[in-house]
Amino acid sequence: MPVERRPRLAVLIDADNTSARIVDGLFEEIATIGEASVRRIYGDFSGTRSRGWVDVLARHAIVPQQQFPYTTGKNASDITLVIDAMDLLHSGRFDGFCLVSSDSDFTRLASRIREQGIDVFGFGEQKTPESFRQACRRFVYTENLLAGTGKERPDSDKAEALRKPSEVVPLVRKALANINSEDGWANLGTVGQHMVNLSTDFDPRTFGFAKLSDLVRTTDRFEIGKSESGAMQIRVKPVGRQPGPGGSTRDS
Image (tube, rainbow, N blue to C red; front, side):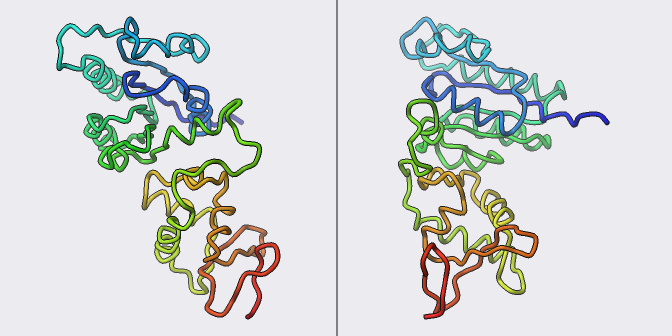
């Protein structure tokens, strides 16, 4: 029986707007999505701004695309990245693109790739404009990648949060409302997928947790249980039920 092929991805990195410190976490994350068949980075590596990438290129088999700043006010790196992306798109060889940048200039590129029916996964800092984040199928904050790599990985599952856990409550409620099950219970995995569909940059790590279940539990707004098959389920906590020992619930 043939082995199912993993999604083939083209990884295009904007060196001018991305720190080399995230490279290990970046490719760990990309490996959960598919195979990084093409790995290219764009920038002026003769200058100090992008020099940090030089030491990590070989380790991750990233091919540098050197762009000299011939004219001020023109970003040759961005233009070259877009041209390469369109060439790769029309080759028909890729199942998805990973655009690594915090620059909103790539919003239209992401939209154009998705118009072709190809997934776009964005990676950038939390300051990345919403237009670019929402143009991607999924957007991952590079701060989360930095916190989860090597010596900077925290001892516990809980990492430094970019946002307060309570801020996720409206998104969970909206996901549950969209699922709209008769008894209010919904599979946690399904809820998580709806949350990503509603907000492309949703990630439990943004709120300081590695797992969605731990994030939901800490809000104290939802009841957690298991289906007959053992799958984890959640629902909005019924009125009159208070948290009990170990995160379970009991009648008040």
